[in-house]
Image (cartoon, rainbow, N blue to C red):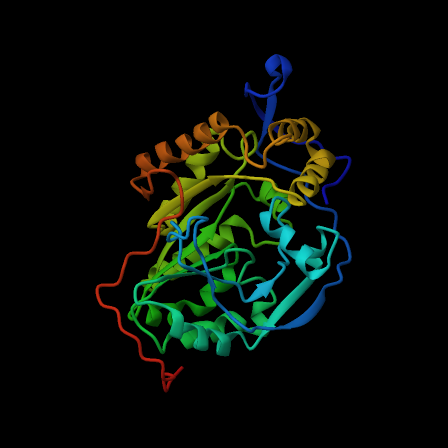
Length: 348
């Protein structure tokens, strides 16, 4: 939670469409540090009947980003205010959106479920870890569910595997990921919204600092593991100024990022109400803008989204980084050969 007496540090006045009179909105480069508070984390075991969820479009076609999603945990300790996945805890009987970061479910038997599910996967399919919760959130250091999943994948070949995380803990598995990259197309995507540590602390209260994430990216790069940066979500009026975007893209390039992805925030309930409540405590004018933008749609107006992504594309071009044309996450490169061997590797 942001300190009530602290004020945001204004950097520039932006004229953005959306409110009567086109009132200016402050572009924030810093934010109050959160007030420390005692936290209780409720952990629950959840039997993993399956590890992979098939992704298809409403018309039954292949999903554009990945074929299968995988999430070793339900809920996430990092507490990112804008996280779209808060709605998923409603299916577990939680009415308070804050339960998403306070009640974490650990999927028991996830590695065995993944081993079984791999028999349904086609050579060359893309498995994406971390589509709803961070697979390297702090609990992973103790529970090692993601580590077990990676070891299972050593027994197969020919897949595309991506991991999305805000955590520096992924560097723990750098050597293992390098071994996996000899058998699969592997890519790690670091979600970084800003290089401003104070603003990041407000937006993502318990995630590692942006610098720690970029250092982890550099570690993977040294091990020969492909890695990139997701500017996700872009937050218009907060993190999308040309200077802020350029600083982030430059830092990603210096850390060894191979590619970029970018997407503007979308706010479905209950994430919208939760995020607006947090914003009002520190940045009431910015909160008013987001409330107006999302009053009838979870996605921001098209012209706002397009302009934010345009700045990322321009920065990527300046720094020589690859980026998909529409700003969506790139799929890992397809392996040249695809075959499966489901026996457990002896040294796994």
